[in-house]
Length: 309
Image 1 (tube, rainbow, N blue to C red):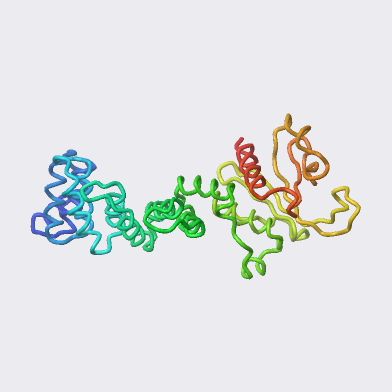
Image 2: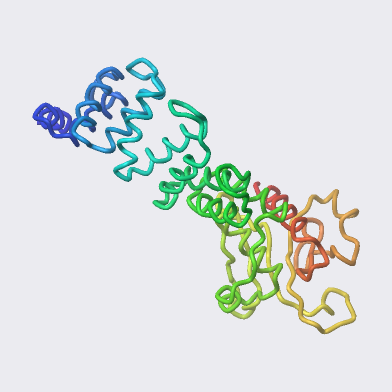
């Protein structure tokens, strides 16, 4: 007996998990001919027995009108049954229906409630949606800090829109973190701007500093995962090495720029020739507040793009 035959037998005997899996098979055309109407039939059998995943799937079929007539009311009904059982994707679905007034009266506060339930379970789409509600003050008082925190959680799971929005929040001063005692104790880079850069790399790109040289423990690089190329470095050096008349230690970032931009960018005050880098392609900026942190974030993004090839 094949796996498909075993699933069908169990489904026919009334096993709700098997009924849901058989519904998936008909939905996807896996080991059977794709048939959305049959998928609805089997999802329905499992859903009627209280199987949460099948209830969510049945709600999804009604929402899109796959294998049945499109019906927002029935979509809400079945999403709701799964949501009440704690099924995160269904909780998100109910939240979306409330926010958009589909099948239920439009209600932002109710949307926030359901997004929150799903977000607390780690459902990235709900985390991102909850972030937008806080950012725009829909259903909750506007709160940049909460918006940024939920956006970070979604971005950490690879949610592309969350990473894009988090980048915007950083650039516009809505998601700049403060230095925590934990971070300042764990990292050799202690300045506020350096800590903000480290958090930006982690939140927006999912990248961590790489300390490659045991003899230079105060030097670190960050690189793209797809190309393996560096798009920046953080270092601690004396200002005198940058051409200033001071022995003060300063934290700096080396970043990429287009060769045709270097002439207008490097002014020997805020933007300097790349320290220990090819000065045709790299420049240095001190992380001491001389350049606005939002501008530094923007230039990190540009450096990241230039490290593509």
